[in-house]
Image 1 (cartoon, rainbow, N blue to C red):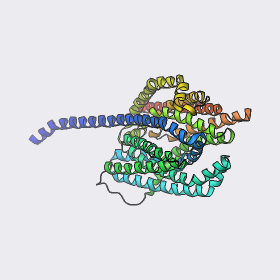
Image 2 (cartoon, helix red, strand yellow; image 1 turned 45 degrees about the horizontal axis):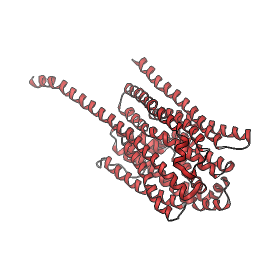
Image 3 (spheres, rainbow, N blue to C red; image 1 turned 90 degrees about the horizontal axis):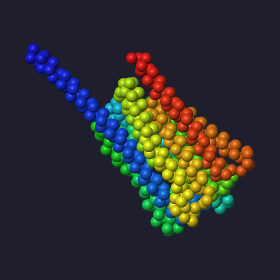
Image 4 (cartoon, one colour; image 1 turned 180 degrees about the vertical axis):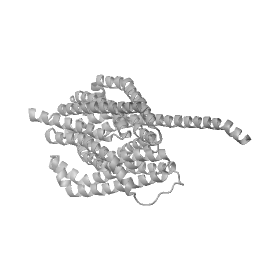
Amino acid sequence: MQRTIAAAVTAPLQAAGMARWRSALGRIAESQMVRNMGAGTCSAFAGAALSVISYPIYLRYLGLRTYGLWLVLTVVVTLAQLGSLGIPWALTRLVAEDRGRGDWPGVRVYIRTASVAICLVGLTLLTAVGLLRGHIVTCFGLAPAEAAVVYSLLPMAAALSAFVLLFSTVNAALGGLGRMDLTSFHEALAQALALAVALPLLRSGLGIRTLLIANFSAYAIAHACVWRRLRGLIPRTSRAPWGIDAVRLRNLLGTGGWILGAGVLSSLLLPVDRLMLSRYAGLRAVTMNDLCFTGSMRIRGLLEAGFRPIMPEMGRVRSSAAAIAVAQRSRRIDRGALKVILLAATPLYGGLMLLAAPALRLWLHRSFDPALPANFRIMLLGSMLSLIGVPGYYLLIGLGRARDCFAAAAIQFTVNLGAILLAMTRGRTLSLTAVSCALACAAGCCTLFIRARCGRVIGGRRAHLAAGS
């Protein structure tokens, strides 16, 4: 009888204690997400600062045309993302779900399976470049001497692409483990190390090969750091079978299928623009387009990187919370992200558009071209329009609506290519301004679709919950 009375008295206290523990754990998880978002923003600032420092250095030692050759080589790096099969983003989400369920052996198997799959993709890429590099070089319409340089360096560029792809995949697993701050740190570390290694090599006169050597060295060090962090975050007591898991491989490919499609179309934007400019406007236009595009995307990345934790957070919530909690969390995250964009992005972009001409002149000195400010302003407008769609993009993936992200990427690619072809048919030439306008218009159309779909998905969940109650 006494035990019954004691149990009746202590049960509510224990329930209250468990509720407090759950509340505390929720606050910790949310504070970790805030740290992840802050770290992403800081990493983006570091990346932007490194770009500001590195561009004048590279242009000083290499010049516009030689640096244009490097950009041609990096097309292979960009296209290598097409072979990722959407695995890095899928790995982040699936690892987050297994982590939410406490399935640590499953986490290990997912990481190992994804790594093996990406290694096979890398071998395929190396083989394809080795067999087709003559045709690849011909596509760019380069002068004989420049074509010979690109031809000789393409295998090294392909190997670098495969290595960067493996790094990105393993680094994505940290995001699924709730440490997107470490993911951002390793990305910034690789960029900083690449610049630090390249500077003395450029002074020694190695030329464009310097950038390949520097990037190989930087990503090797960053890759080692990622594996060290993974060993520390995954419990050693969790055992997982060796080899890859066919079921989890299907999950990776299935989850990443729509993400792959979106990534393919998004990754093709810049190579298509470079290819068209290389053939019809020259290498100088390629370099200026990359400078404007990279600069505007770096500005976008200052806030975009802070929104990346949305996707693994939604994956974790979906695996461990009720539907009503998922809907409430979705609405809160979406509203908060849009407020951040409104308060932070508007003055930032407005100030940059006003100061574009003097800032570029001060930054580039002798490499400054009068056509840069106008094109940079157009690219800034496009990147701001794209930024408005970023929270919705990550939210849709986290909610299992990656097919909508694919549709948005298809709209963006179609509008961009259509605008370029329209400009060529009307004037039979292609200008840098026409390419900039095409990209900005495509970004706006993509964002309109994402925002419409995001509002509809969240609204649909609210209506479903209301009907159920």
